[in-house]
Length: 562
Image 1 (spheres, rainbow, N blue to C red):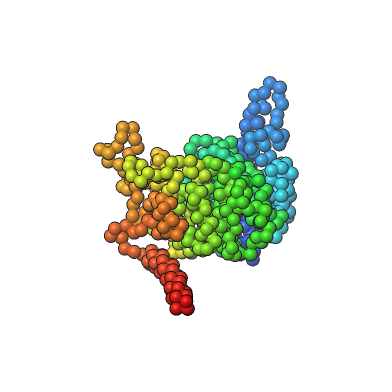
Image 2: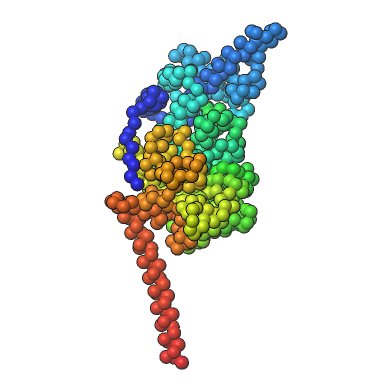
């Protein structure tokens, strides 16, 4: 299925974000600083602007309460009165307006460093998190940056501030290239993962959490469904890089969230399990590094086996993809769901990785696999795959061979979606998904699960698209049933049974199952994939032919020799 959405015009917030970024980037270009040197301090100033906005709102409430109190007691200078409401307490010298009003000749870098230290002193959850490298900026540059950040209206709420922070994170990731890809996953990818997982309530883990985008989008999902994410979600993360872990904790704070984020200090998710994750989590979201080599497998041996971190064994190949996949699977409780980004090569990997994939599929945990087209990430142009696990699926009955439930979910089915030709072209080198496209894809999964569609994201456009492909004629509808029903659509989606997957060599490559829609031209990308599949089948047949040839030769030699 091909759905290329037009580029949409900027909204007011996007215009503000882009204007702020353009100004900040221009200042950086004239400073001689690298993007890596510049990013954390600029994000710190955005954070400080947000913190002051929330502080001022809470202070006004406390002043009003104090004025109406008969006892005349005021709590406006008590840190606990702010922290109890999830608001950071700011001393006078740590407030954004104070820093903004400093004269040109002042040592502004030192003043901002001291402000950050003061915030950490009075807000223990941020200890060691905030940047303190502002003295690498000259005072004129820092003054200009403060002025630019002050253009963010104090009337903005959590979500709008969070979007600005996320936008800057994304732009820094884009400018930092490969390093940027290590800490940031584009929000449309994360949004789709969250829409499919539906993390309404529970414990959520990201063992490669980067700057925390998975947590932020999960919280946004909860808020859009009229619940308080701070009370519904318990957040746990692991991040190898200390600086990136601090970005994550700052990102959570900007969005009014808190979590247990372990970072730095040589922590590594392959070897370390700071949250005792096995079987403890309701949800897991991750975008791990692909195709990592040189993992010390000797250090993992004690974590191999049933009810351990690597329940299916270790791959013989020098590639960590199936280490990550097992970490994700083993962290889930018996109803837990996981969604993660994975290299395409993992879907068809052979030898020991094929055996590990077979065990995962036979455990009936793989729920859905979505093929994603190229240019969706800042650092790589290659396509990738989104995997979704559901430990609760194994308790479902298998799909019957015939009858009314054909085409719906069972313990022995996997949903494959080919979304490679669904996208919006941002510029020549980058693509993303619109909210309508995300809502449409997520609702295919909901229909497959037997759930009602949810148009909170995507609205009428997503509904119209779903109606065009999955509506049920009223004559075939049971009383009270939904007007939508899942069905296999060539070129878009297909439910495959374990028997069909076994026949494909335990492949989780959606292209092997979904096929091409009638009348639709085969793209270069599809042709290449089909050619790879045919070539693999030819190699297998040739290998079997060589085995047979050897057996025949041995038998003939034995007869002649006898």
